[in-house]
Image 1 (cartoon, rainbow, N blue to C red):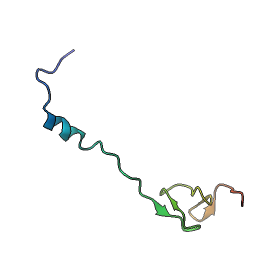
Image 2 (image 1 turned 90 degrees about the vertical axis):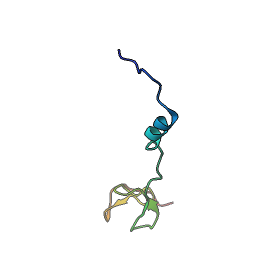
Image 3 (image 1 turned 60 degrees about the horizontal axis):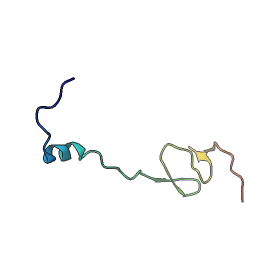
Length: 60
């Protein structure tokens, strides 16, 4: 198995790792209950997706 001849410099390592940062997920507003939710997913608060109730939620 081949081995590197020289060690990678700190700059080269940091350039590679510059793309590893985590990003905050984009949240959109649910048009039904106006809670924040992930796009293209069922709203966890009301259970609606694209104007239709997909998940039955109990009223508390």
